[in-house]
Structure formats: C-alpha cells, structure tokens
Image 1 (cartoon, one colour):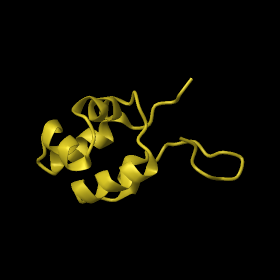
Image 2 (tube, helix red, strand yellow; image 1 turned 30 degrees about the horizontal axis):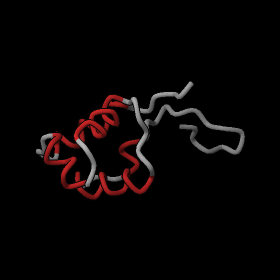
Image 3 (cartoon, helix red, strand yellow; image 1 turned 90 degrees about the vertical axis):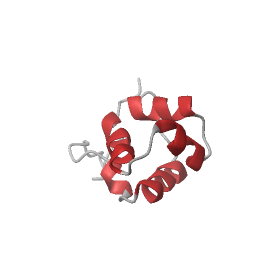
Length: 79
C-alpha cells in the first residue's frame, strides 16, 4: 500500500503561484487529470516532474516533502 505524501503541498504551491490547474498542467506538459491525482496524493510525481513543478511554482522541491516523514534504516526520509 502506498503511503501518501503531503498531498496539499503541491496544490498550495500552485495556488501561491496564482496558477489554475489547467494552466499549470499545460506548462508542465501533463494532463489536468494527472495533476489532480498528484495534488490529491493519489499519484506520486517522478523526481523530474517534482523539480519542474518547483521551478514553475518558484519554490524548493523540499517544500513538497513533509518534515514529519519517517526515516528509514539509513537515516533517509521514507516517502
């Protein structure tokens, strides 16, 4: 079972960038439905997409990773 990441971070950053879903999806080169799934936490974007989203929304990719994410055995954030 997939664990949800912070599903609202993607949506919050898009809204802070004053973009509607349709415009953001077009600029990202994905469907509006795909963006809706990402924002709802139903789909995890690939790292390359998360970087594109961060650039478009003018934020850090780290803004998409919740601080409370558990650590794995190597001390890395699980996701």
